[in-house]
Length: 344
Image 1 (cartoon, rainbow, N blue to C red):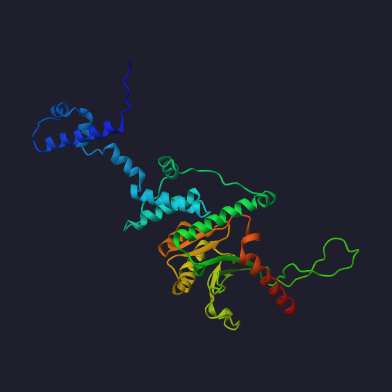
Image 2 (cartoon, rainbow, N blue to C red; image 1 turned 135 degrees about the horizontal axis):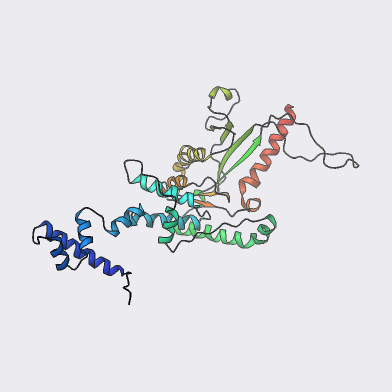
């Protein structure tokens, strides 16, 4: 019968122990030759010779290929599960980025890049995790599933609040909206009955985009606004005569949209300093929109370090759940359009 080369893990552990005994016996001059040591301790002579020349054992090589220690991998697994439970299951790129953050936190020098297949191999080592494709919903399907999806979300919300002891005073909703400078939002007008189609309104806007980040507390107070203009460098003199409140934050980006870096600065320089003095219990909850686009691993790590729990709303549910999107941004854009009309 052909020899079965597949050996159990226990057999490999026992052999490794005998190899170590053989190496010690040779180093202590208790046995004179490799051949004799291999025979006495019942280990392959070639393997013993290789180990004496500095070759690592299979377990050491396996640990090096893992890059993360077992404790670090366990932490990463719990982070993935936590993200999934909060409605923001991470992508492969997010997992790799979080692994890099973990490596950096335990090293004085920048770690080497992870291999292209590292996440795939990591998932193979952890069968409790599963990689799957996200589903794309059309509006009709999303509306049909709204009741179940929303009920599941509220159950998650309630569970987190109960488990962490989060009080209403410590719950916040974060959202952003954009404006095209000088353009009026959709408005109702009166036109003659026989006019085909919808009437058009000539507008004076320059179509430059501006984004506003807002965050409100369940008790009704708001964190100072953050406004993002298009530009490369912020010059304070641009708005010195516009009576912008002193506690508002001004940012710039190449297109006037928010970025991951701006989201991090908002968290560190605006949300945390403003809300920390008003904490009632230990944990704060930050409710985000269903895309969770700013919930990067670094954003999530800073939240974790500051006892902030981000929770993503279900996708395609902002028309029902998002208080800022529905209750604040709509009236704000209409008011902005009214001011543009008055000044044009």
